[in-house]
Image 1 (cartoon, rainbow over the protein chains, first blue to last red):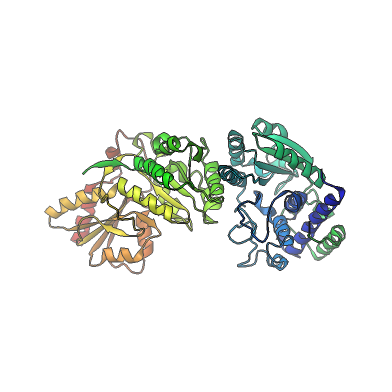
Image 2: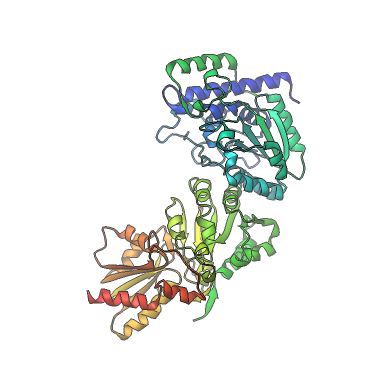
Length: 283
Length: 312
């Protein structure tokens, strides 16, 4: 269990991530607000609490790794990486510019701290699995984390990886499902129902934990449980709200990759500035 | 000429290199008894990952392994190693330029009995269009061994297409390392130059013998590095030639011949004849030669092309 003080800091980091995402997207440009916001606490807990990582040595062989399989939510990861000093905060202002370090989807060759190239959905869990196999071959204790979307898991490759990760008993691999129930164009159950979620992962041989994906304490506790699981990988089903935290973007497909006007932008920034408070990234 | 198997060479080399380099790991999609990756599995079970009939997962998993410093070799039949996981090769491997080696076994028409679904007429096209990818098409078992060693030296994605059947040995079993990009003369320079890859090189030699009796000289070159292609070496091979013939056991659309012509566009002022599969899928046959004949991948076809070019 983490203390209230730790939890408060992680929540402040999550709100900071959201604040940075809004800043990055700006006015009159499309950006993936919805899925970045639903994942903010998960990303916050991973970088702010769970993972062994060193921004000064991003490729340190003893680091834990995070693969953002739902690559369109890269903005949340970029914000966290910048807060931790993987690159200057100023880079966030150059998102998607020609030649920029921060691409529309994660690119490990360009962005320090990014571990895999994703964006074509469904591949990240397999990549994470390969890392977990390699780490185990080297007899290291490091762990690999992966975040997939509940829409993304319509991709068959996810279930190929789900089968092989349990076949290989990869207890150093944990996947989060960002269970926000909305994909690019509508509710997941209207596009292609990927439920039942819990029994499906369980049937594929995974240890399954369900949490409120916006509660950092619950996320931390689930991760502790995952670390103690032997002989099988863990899936943490994180119940989340797409666009969490900013009313106009909440629980709607409209801001999956939406565009803010001046008024929305200011509203979001003001709200998030207040929520993040005087956050300083020294967790 | 002695005939030896490229796929046995593949399995043998995985073991040989695996003994020297502990970073080498092998992934397979339930065809290890055909691709011969089973040899590696027997020697190094802990470094062998059977991924089952799930090629997309296999390729992205190989990408992940490479990101922990391993050197993964992933094999399956060429159709299932390229077309099926194309997007995984593109996104997981080639965009980040990862050190993943892919072996497309039973390439071309060499799995003659299994028909169109199992015959790769498009793997060269698919692999060579990907930035960062290296593409190799060995002429024989010895060259297969040498190319695999060269692939290990390259820090980046590589694809090798391997024939299922025993093919004539046309290269020297010596200590000379493989030189990627080299367009290698197999007989002696002629008025007409044939640049061929894989099984078509030996067909070219047969054609050259026939043509010599008719007073037409055909220089036969082996091109086994299809990407990156070496323009200088191509131009040297063509110096003084009156015509060029390309020959490959692959679709003419986007294959080795296309690669040559793309490279030489603007520098080539001799007539060209391209031999390959003409916008068709494969089909079942009783034996390999029957299929090669059916698709016109023969010494006679090369000789006929040479006669026409000589008459121009």
